[in-house]
Image 1 (cartoon, rainbow, N blue to C red):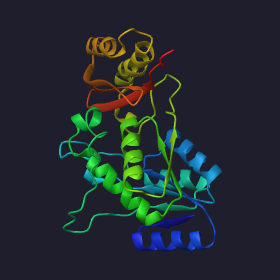
Image 2: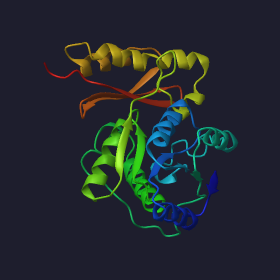
Image 3: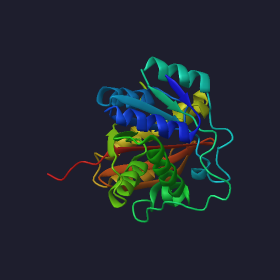
Length: 260
């Protein structure tokens, strides 16, 4: 397994693979890999001749008050998991932004509302880093988790609008046994907070059976002790919600029923 820090070296290896007739699959991550990431890697491994996992905690998608410094970075564990999953290359750049970086990618429709309303500038950072990763790794396809539903929507739109020759494959949310969506930030939760956090997936599951899912879920989460509601919104056929439990921000979503 190649472990590469230099964008130039990563790009050169990707071009070498493409000249050799290999298809390339990319799984972009910020590390702290869990079973959800491993499912993305498994899907990529089944479909592509060469698999690249990028591990980069992207500062451009964090606000100054967010958890950039605290974000978990278990490099040794991540590398071991990638090796076990048969990853061909792990791209771990120390930084992807030159001094004086002044070029950004902005999607102006689907990035509004939901996390875009709560985290101004977040999706500018996401689209910019994802396009950079696509340019560096030259993938034929990339895999993203459905848990980050708005991110997936925005990346698909970016790929469409900018004619980026990368196929985007969504993978349904992987959940723990208790129903909580897997997230690298779950490690922040105490045992008590984790129990409280279950109100989010359970509320979503119940809400889609209600006549007014948005209003019902807003009321339900707002009335749950220990839960601070961020938003409940419907978008792109999914019911999406974000909450804080203690200092931990959690997001989740489920499909809305289709009209009969």
